[in-house]
Image 1 (cartoon, rainbow, N blue to C red):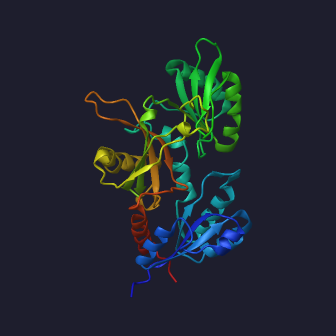
Image 2 (tube, rainbow, N blue to C red; image 1 turned 90 degrees about the horizontal axis):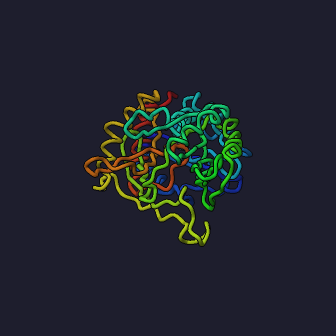
Image 3 (cartoon, one colour; image 1 turned 90 degrees about the vertical axis):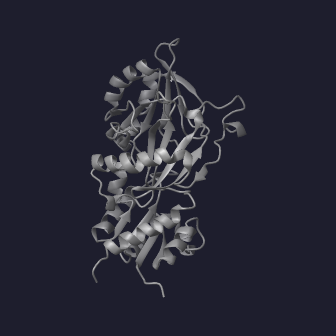
Length: 351
């Protein structure tokens, strides 16, 4: 008989009916449940909504750990109450992955500025107030002609804008949001910056990076279990690329499929070596995160940067995703279960 290692909850967002009907076998995390069971770990769904918050909290206090898949923004809802509950549960000895405090360090866009000195960084600026954005961003835009502004927290392209200077129309810029279905808009720069005021009230800061001309070559998503790469996904994205004449809803305007690859994929071995041997350890040092605090599953999204003198690809970090990493490569569920067992064995609560 397989040794009983411990108890986990897998938490995702859903209504009261979804909570009542959830089983380990009827959701998109079924492979993770299966891999956990194979290692002797009992895992149960913990479907969360603000309406069932007390029930979920009581459930989490009865397990050893919880794996969380909830986006920072979801149809007008945020994670504020969930994160407060998770912090409280963690204070009672339940380990949480990813812990809200780690999400704030890794999963917010501010990480792009804090780690810009690493090899994955670029000319990144950080604005902590609307006044600073108005004073400094126009100079940044004047130098490069095209920049990308990103709100600190968001998903699905919300609050990520390509801003392009229009020299023939003084004071006017062309903006395009990364959200699917967006179209370019010509607008006075002052009006666009006023539109960004809300980001400071909600998220605390805005990040500004150069636009990467090799965006049409696609994005590489590097999936990481703690500090080891568990797979890759390559996708021809259409975010921040103007839609074709047929419009933003036409087939030609849609992103291509994300093609998953194992960690051993030959074309990504240089990126894997950089992530495992240099960038992740230095990120941990910069952010003050220990290995035991790293999310059990997270990903780093890279765009291709300028080619090196020898024609070799370079990579520019455009985002780290921590809150809700899914879909995942075929090899990832086993890695998640292995890391969960490792943490359960090292953090067993007495009693």
